[in-house]
Structures are given as C-alpha cells and as structure tokens.
Image (tube, rainbow, N blue to C red; front, side, top):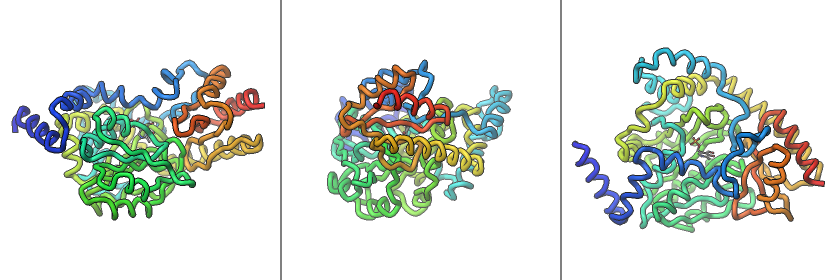
Length: 388
Ligand SMILES: Cc1ncc(COP(=O)(O)O)c(C=O)c1O
C-alpha cells in the first residue's frame, strides 16, 4: 500500500470512531515527528507550579529517576556498540532485545515492541483505543500523561479516586464509564507507589466490554519485586503491559521502553508513524537495555539498596510524627496537613533539595522519590530544618 493510501485508511478509521476532520491535525501533531510527544511526555515536571526539574539542585528527588546510572553490564554493552554505530543495525540488535524480553517475561517474539521511552506508547494507546465516543478511565491520583493526551484529543476522561488502601478502584473505574475505550492501570502507581492486585486487574478484564483495552503501566515494577501482569498478554488480546528503562535501570535520558501485547495491537499502535519510533532505536540504548534486563542479581541488589534507604527515611519521618502513606516502590507521599505542597516544595528548594510535585486531589501531599543514601540524608536534614 502507498503512503497516501495508508494515511487515508487511518483517517477513515479515526473519523469512523468519531473524531472530527478538524481533530486529525491534532493527532498528526502528536505523532508527526515525535516533538509533540516529547513535550507531552514532560507533565512530570509541568504541574505543581514547577517549570522544570532543577538541574542545579544538589539533591534531586523530584522526578522519580534512579539515583545512579545504568547497571554495569548495560554501560559496557552500550560503550562497546558505539564503534559499530555506522550501521543502522550491525546484527539485529532490536531482535536481540526482543529475545531478552521473551526470556525474562515468557512472552512470544511477536508480542513485544520496543519504544524510545514509554511516554510515546502511552500517548499512542489513547489515540488508538479512545475516541470522542469511547473515553479513557484513569485513577486519581495517577501518572497524568494518558489523561492529558485524552484532553488534548477531546476524548472524555473519568478519573476515579484510589481506594482507601491506595489501590485502583477497578469496580469504580468500570462504573465511571462502562464503555470506555481504554482503562489505564499504573501499578505500582505513580505517585503513591502502591500495588493494585493482579486479581483486581483480572476482574476488570473479565467485566469490561470485550472491545475495550486495559493498559497496565509497570514502570516501577522492579522496585516492588511483585508478580507482574506480563503472563496476561499471551492469554488475551485486550491487554497491554508497558515497561520503561527510565526507573530502576537508570536510563531515563537514554529513552528505552517496551510494550507486551497481541501483535494486532502492536500493528495498530505503530501505524501512525509506519513503525518508525519502534523500529529505529539508538544502538547504545538497545544494547544497554538488553544487557540490563537480564541482570537479575543486579536488579535485585538495586531494589534492596532502595528498600534499605527507604526504611531509614520513613522511620525518621514517622518518628517526627509526619503522615507518610504506605508505599511499595521508590517514592512516597507525605502529607504536610496544614501547608500546601507547593509551598513545601519551595521551602525544600531553598535547602538545595528538589522534592516532587503534588496532585490537585491532595493539595497538601508531596511526592518524594527515594534517592541514594546521601540524597535521603540531605532530605532528612532539610525536613528537620523546615518542620519544627
Ligand atoms: C508511571 C509512568 N509511566 C510512564 C512514564 C514515562 O516514562 P518514560 O517516557 O521515561 O519511559 C513515567 C515517567 O515518569 C511514569 O512515571
């Protein structure tokens, strides 16, 4: 099929799903050259009155990044492949990466698609499965990118508060829009770090309409070390499991991620750019991710390092009588009660500590990322100065 015919087919599909002709330019903007996606991928920093992460802050625990760089086998593989960088693909490195995912996650080859970061497939899943007639359902609070993409596309969004245990209220999510195009589950959830049980996700899958999709964003799963949902993708067509290398793997700036889902879904998500984003990935990022993903002992050691530092930090905060919510990942929520989170963020910035943002549903609660031991010692020192 020629490019023109492919474009026409995509346009017909979008209009058939209820998008107006005038919305098509917006969608093209989203996937045109990736620039719009990159901008949209930054809401992590855009809200809460913070213009950008403060790269000059000495202690940076605001953006849920890892406190250190890629695992050593990944760094070595990335450095080694630079010498072959004249070739688009010296030896099918993309295939090697997919084989590593197959080995670790036990999914078939054609069920895996790598991507340069998970922000892109996250935006793409909204345009692929939602429309003005088939909305998006998310939790509140959760990672905002899906919701913001939907708003940009004028897709109806329902944001359903978490349960009292800070898990996704899957029954409430289905009731909020029983015919949504996409249900977004982030587990561990950003910003709370809490896990939604697989049984709840399965309930949602079994009770939603067969033609709607569930996207399970497991960006932080290695920090929690809990069973993942990847086994679902070989069993059913209506689920996408998404991972990023921006968190425990310390590769946020190297841009690597992947989705696991039925090949038909991969095809649908790729068609907006002819598979370009997924097909042409930087070699050092691919090589680094492949070597990192299979380094099980090092991943475990990194998780345990984070857990140790988190335990010391939370014990100090609780001893001071501060209200810290439960977490299973490399972030926690702290409720300052009488003080707006934005003011607290500004106060920490004065101590050279950049903490995370807040969410409108909880205006006195800040997200703090668990950094290195040194980072958290600086954070605790700042807490002791700011909170009497
Ligand atoms: C839950 C969640 N999903 C996806 C992303 C996007 O990450 P990236 O585009 O770096 O893979 C983030 C980043 O903070 C996140 O927290």
